[in-house]
Image (cartoon, rainbow, N blue to C red; front, side, top):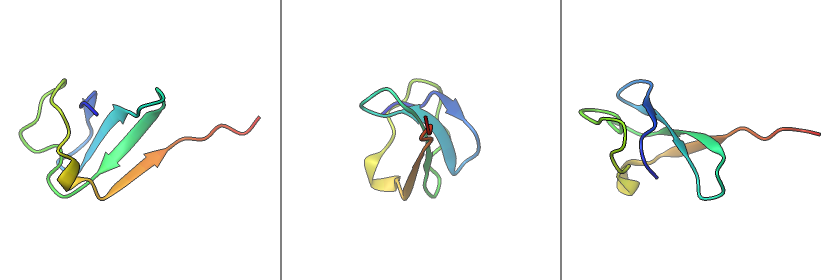
Length: 54
């Protein structure tokens, strides 16, 4: 996953393998990152995905 937007030092927005927008949380996951950087998998604590009910 790559950083699409930095929300805070601990939350970034990204896209998962199937193209869904996700919020990725982890201690310092967005610290000193820029858009396009690869997210360090070892820092990921939680991934939130929006599921649309139809």
